[in-house]
Amino acid sequence: MTQPLSGEPDPSASRPAPREPSRGLVSTTIAGVRDLMLSVVIAILVILFLYQPVKVEGTSMMPSLEDQERIFINKFVYRFGMGSVERGDMVVFWYPGDPSKSYIKRVIGLPGDRVEIREGEVFLNGEALHEDYVPDYYRDRQSSPELVVPPEHYYVLGDHRSSSNDSRSWGPVHRRHIYGKAVFVYWPLDKLGLIH
Image (cartoon, rainbow, N blue to C red; front, side, top):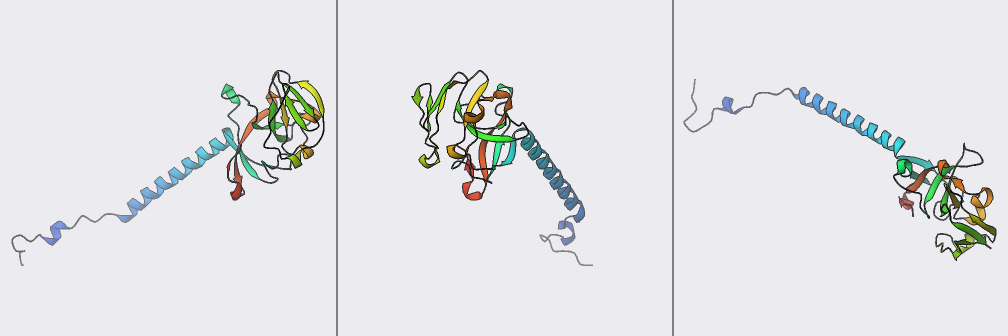
């Protein structure tokens, strides 16, 4: 039997003990599945309680939102006093005439505001409202007499005024019917981004 020369390591002494390869693979797989399941649960909770994907149906919010676009609405922003409905918000609400239907419109008048429409131009508290989100060719020339928005109600209009069924027809929306705010377009990809 030969002995290694002084200064040379013993080859058998430097070899690490053999590891079981399947044990590392199994624990890595279990950790990956656990992380995936946790991510799915968190995503479901976020979608159920904070954001909801919806499809825009109709042309009443053009050009801001197109027919068949997919958007996320924030369902939490107006709950528990976390945020108030602001002028200019695009809100999603149960249609007062048929609560099984949801509508999306832009808030124009807040409680206590005086809203009047003269030949398509909106006047808010006696002042003409600057609406750069409504192209001139989407305006109609209708007029509506001045209305004072009641407490807990909001006056809402579609951006495509000539094809929108809104507060001009059925009056202001009660706060209890508003359940979300449109915040983000996610489809089609060329429109991906925040909603203004």
